[in-house]
Length: 496
Image (cartoon, rainbow, N blue to C red; front, side, top):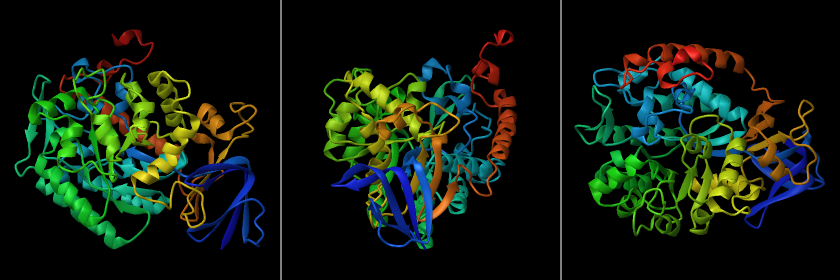
């Protein structure tokens, strides 16, 4: 069946980049786009009216952690200073002799499989991504049972996921007094690496474009040189991309320098992992950053020279009082910039706006991180990081991954008069303005409604699950804090 979408503005593709067309159309048949432009002359089977909307390629979120993020809600405006703003160390490392609750990624496989939140986490994650116009995402390092639950939701709701169980050679732990320790795995993490390879092989045999494999050594400081080298070899053999967290935390940076006499980026380079198929999560605390006072480093040059991608998660890091030192310098170095949501909200429009504003401030240049650049990062940049020339663009032959963003909602005045729809979107938009989502030629959301998905019920289930977790926090928190002690509610005189 051939479908034509008539848009008020259409983000077409020309000469390797986006091109905005006024009063144009997109035509798709099956899973592929067949035409983008004005005045399509052939008959079609159906027409979708998006005349008040910006018709765009679907967003590509390159940094997702599955879950409803109940624990991260407890870290707004607060956190342990001794952890240098690193949230996962604060909320996902249990006190010695206890087990974390509500976050399965750091449980043993049998414990994670029994976690009642697995299905809820997956449904909440994929539904939120879809509601916000994300048609492709990368999950960074959840447990194998988390990936299996996401796989099921990707196929059910029609969102393309790059999934791969995370692995490492050991983990951060806490003693009884809340001090950080590092615990190596007996086999150096080989069992987790093998689980990841087995999962990716299963995905390949399944042969569904909605689910792809990716190798994710979770955190560079917790991975041995052997595991990193195995990752590079497996990526070549399996033909899949890689992702990891590096240059994301003061502790991680100095632990890596102490152990290897190399920065995290230099360590990745030493095992030939710096390639165009690598997506580095954050990379905002690198040798070039003045915040680290590290002399003589050339991490930017190393990343750019090897054409690696950085998944920049602006809302998440600014919430932790951190920033990318200079969006402009990263781009000028040749780094492929992409946008990720990381924790919450999974709103790519808000993340584009935050990336743009802080990119200008930190680059000391009002022309830096323009609306064009951050929009490109959320679409074409994400596609490049996955070596996909068939997503992130609206062009004949590309996948029919199409969204419509309503710029003339009758219930808001946010956009005002529109001169440039891309600037209007980045400056004024939110994810809830996405009204239509199509992936692989199938309508997944129309008129802001996802068929057979009750967002209100999902939200209520997440609230009940979270309140149960919050009520038990002191049972496993390294400092034995209650939820109120960890995150004092605003304007709460009885909480001191």
